[in-house]
Amino acid sequence: MFKDQASSAMAPVKDIGRARDFYSGMLGLELEGEPFETVLTYRTGDTRLIVYVSEEAGTNRANAAVWGCGDDFDAVMNQLEAAGVVFERYPDLPGMTLDGNVHSAGPMRGAWFKDPDGNILHVNNM
Image (cartoon, rainbow, N blue to C red; front, side):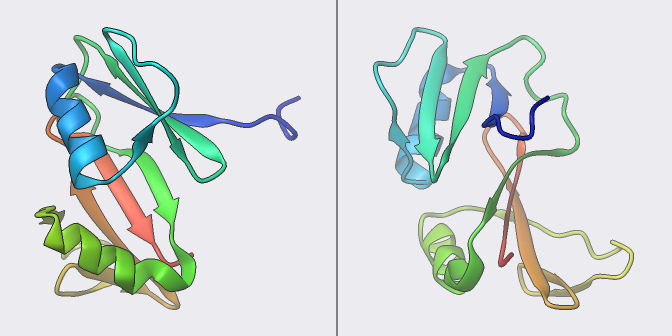
């Protein structure tokens, strides 16, 4: 049913202005089309990230979005660090080791960080 359909990630936020500062400013994403009062749509590769106002913002304790950066992973990490992104550290993840801000499991390397509303965002080298 959905195998040939595109999908989008969605991130609920409480303050759309603060979210715009984070996603546009810190992460360097560009808005797609005209923003609505309570919805921002970002193009990210071949997909979209939809940021929207919700009373439920901040309640998710799992990944909201993931970016597979491939060989650009180290460069992306450097850019995020330079932008002031604060990374999460999960030293007790089964099967993973932690070196600085990067978690590893076999060939997979990844890092997690949160937006201002606590949405968990993930980058990896896959």
